[in-house]
Length: 171
Length: 171
Length: 171
Image (cartoon, rainbow over all chains, first blue to last red; front, side, top):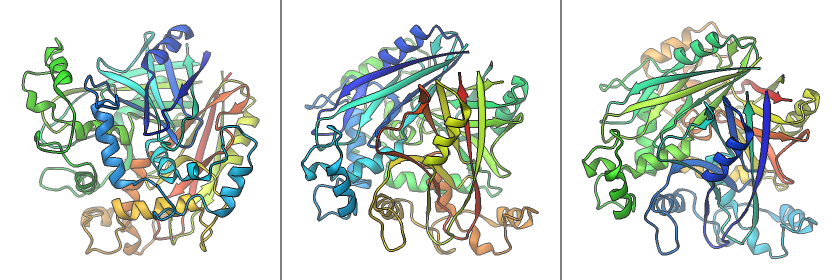
């Protein structure tokens, strides 16, 4: 058996949900792995990001988001509303957790507490899941003719450097 | 390590969400793989279909749908409403994408644009995920005594020939 | 290739959604597997339980639930309301299925039909998925600095002994 790993570096836009079409990179990893039959796992190590399998849509709104992304954002804003201020219903993050996050030496956690009001992003990411697993058969990623792989950053509060991790395993 | 793949051919009903109980086929693939310990990935290569793990229910409604499926349909119709006409809130598919889909030489994309109003099916499928991964231990699929595997086609607009793909990997 | 399996025994609280932080156990399994590169699948064999990847929050409500769990419960109570009586909208379980479940010789299915009104737990578990797959790289589980693995029991009707299953596969 062989394993082949790849990390992708992605920059979110910091103003709305970020959708990264990473299909070409995933196909590239499968190719470089030289694996004939097996699986490819695409995973986010961040708790406010997800990986989904979706159609690519040629029409974009004025922000450059594809129409299915616009539709998904509208539905999510209704069922898992944004945490825009302390006056929303969210309990997250809470005083102790805020203190913990502000005390992290990690440069990914900046000094503005307002950017931590992202409870909606955490819940959305849990719902969509942190990974997706695809079958590799006869050296090809099994995603049909109109299927694409997207990495989603649900955190809308600030620009962030994100990592998407891939592993291809098989023979 | 061994890998064993199997493709299932499924026909959706074209009038409502289609739920296919594929548990026997998945168990059969595990058996034929002769794998003792490993995993079984069950995946949809279509962006309007999902794979879930759910209980089988003995009671059916007049359509032949199991009661948990009826309950799930009712909830989804509320939170991700159907795109039944251009007058709904969905932006999908958009003029350019419609032109692209109608121009596909693929026989799976017919000439009636009305059948492409399936934005709800795309979003539902992203939410439930395109695959599910099960552990195989001592040659047995780990799904408990009342657990079953279902392939869901969320596209309600037309009958479609669908494929569900399986891979069993392990020793 | 190597495979390494581990089963966790968990007891739910029987009064509200149970969240089990199993991160240490998952890391322990990866360590004991002696696998350098591969994957770790964490799976529920129960159809009312899920596995998620989420941040650990230091603040707890009076029940001892973390703030993100409180937020998630509140949102789920709205979009997938609890089945608290026969007067709710749920069709599950239905007369034939109730008879089937009451007739099971399995000690996990007790003699009180009221505890079977858990259609909400089934639908929530399908939505979040029965498993999560994590990449193992250079012997480390790839979950970032603030990521944790939780096993959720969505069944709020009775205390239950639950099993969470793990497999680590790789080289």
